[in-house]
Each structure stands twice: as structure tokens, then as C-alpha cells.
Length: 323
Image 1 (cartoon, one colour):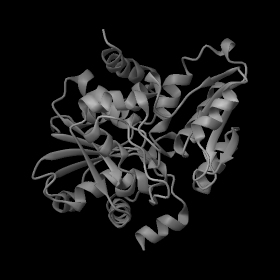
Image 2 (spheres, rainbow, N blue to C red; image 1 turned 135 degrees about the vertical axis):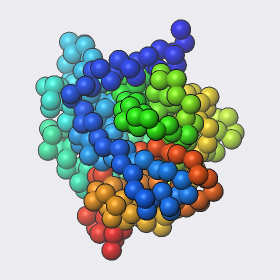
Image 3 (cartoon, rainbow, N blue to C red; image 1 turned 135 degrees about the horizontal axis):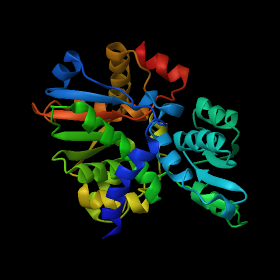
């Protein structure tokens, strides 16, 4: 059995582990979104997950299996925000100390939520410093279990349970596509494995901000590309510098397409999600819907599941979007 086959099986195990722990988030549709998208759209509202994002799934699946005696200092993670909150929250639930490396320009709500859950938050400047390098220095002291946001098979397996759940909720409906936001690639990789584990026919598409399309370019070149220094996007959660190694090894083989959306399209999708479902979705969480709505020919009358991956948005950005 290959590692990828093993992780596909692990998605099913993760679903058992997360049963009655993770929120079974709703799968919603609306005639207005269907009309705008040119097909049928079901939105998986992961913004209603614990910690406000799908990241809780991977963090719990990984940390609940941790052999604690080996790691007296607890868990060390680096994050653009949502993974850090999830690590901190699961750490509090399980009584595990947590240290999280986060960018200083992450939304204040994400930093403060991690701190409120007891995490030691180490801030860095994402324009001049590298989060992996900072975590590596801390990790060199020993005693930590490093839990990255994507490069960990148990994290990826946990993230895949969002798609697994969505397919179960579809009932008699069948999806042609499942479109997911993509930063480091852990959610899209987990989604690919969930499709494989369930023997679903749906194609998996990743959605990226226009200015951070590293996965799109990486699939074209066959190597992991980096985003240009100084790139700017409202999608703070999707600003990983390059695709994570393990997710990319899965995505390179199984992703069928990568679509992008610009900031204006993302803000419009946030507004529509609020108007249709009365939910607050952060920019990175709305990018998959934004990409589909930006080009009606993409869906072309088919049925898609879209994962709205998180809702940890600063109030100023949210009000700007819905105004």
C-alpha cells in the first residue's frame, strides 16, 4: 500500500475519531446562487466549525493521537491564523501545551483567539521572515511535536473529513465537482483522498487568489513554485509562500483543475453568502464560490460542492464586503 492509499484510508478513520467532536456543518443551496453560477451549487459552511474553520478537523485528528510522553513541551505549529487557532483550541481540550508561530499582520481576531486558548503566540514579519525557519529554530531545542498546517498525513486526513461529510449530506444528489480553497494545499489534498476513499466520481478543483496562484503554476511546471514577494490579497488565510510538499505530491496526481478569483470577486462572494445564508465567511473561505461565480462557463449546468472553509474575518473587512 502506498502512502497516498494509506492516507485515503486514514480519512475514514479520522471521520470516526471526529464523530461527535467536530461540528457536522450544514450543506446549503439557494436558487440565487444556482442561477448566478450557471449550475447547482451546494455550499459546505465550515465557517461554523469549531474555531471558525475546517482546520479544527486536522488538528484534532493529529493531536488526539499524539504520544505525549515524547513531547514534554507540547505542540509547535506555524500558521497564517486558522491552523494556529485550531492547534490552540485542541491543545486546551486535550491538556497539551501549544506554541504557534503566526504573522504579525494576521487578522487580530485570529491572533487573539489563539492566545485566549492558552497558546504561546510567536509573531513574525511575513515580508522579511520565514515561518518554517522560525519554527525550525524553536523545534531544534527539542521536546516539541511539530504539527504543520499541511505537511502531515494525519492533518491531511482530518481535513478530508469535511468533503467526506459533504458527500454523505448530498444524499441522492450527485456532485460533478468539489471546489475547495487552496493555500498550502492540505484541504484540497484531503478532499482528493476523501473522493478516493468513497469511490466518488466528482472531480476536485482547487481555488486560489489571483495573486497567490502557486498551486496552479506548480501543476503546470511540475515543481513547487513560490509566490512573488510583495504579492497582495485580501485572502490572508491563503498566503502560503509555496505549496506544502506532501499535499502537493497528492494534488499533482489528483487535482483536475485550479481556478482563481480576484479580490473584488471574493468580496462579492462574501456578500452573497451573508445574504443567502446569514453566515460570515472570511475572504479565503469564499474564494471557491468566487471563482465559480466569476465565470459561469466553469460550471456549465453541472453540480458542484463548494467548501466555505472559514469565517474568521476582521469586522472591518466583513462590513466592507457586505456594505
